[in-house]
Image (tube, rainbow, N blue to C red; front, side, top):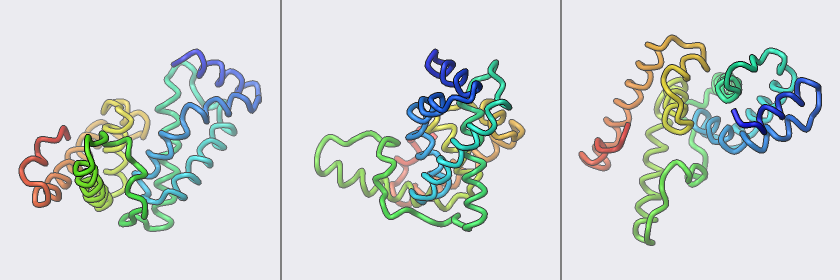
Length: 191
């Protein structure tokens, strides 16, 4: 954990809002993208993250400063996203802006590549949104937030075997969905 994060958390523990402002600057964009992967709705993702930051402010005393802040925070974000997904039954939704998650894929070199990348991005997001929310969450935490399986299990309170199974099932479904569209080269992607 960075010194900035430690200072922010110390300030929050004293009830100072400036600590929360620092954490928002550090975590807002990635957490919105994480919630978006689960929900498929940009506005809902932004609302979830706003609620998560409020929860952090209200429950900072429950945070164990001997542990990393990120998994604790992302657990709040993911759980809030699950609640919203269950209420809205958004398991099949897809935001109208498929370029919102641009940072998940590398930029292409030329205009032809950019068109192909946009199509691939849309198809990949469409395939991801066919997955159950918990598989999307595991996939997002592993490949977008770059968390290890054990960290995901700790953050979400799932057994390690459940995390491994959800990742395996998600990757299998994505391969099955993407191979007909992209050919065998879809199997070369580091799932």
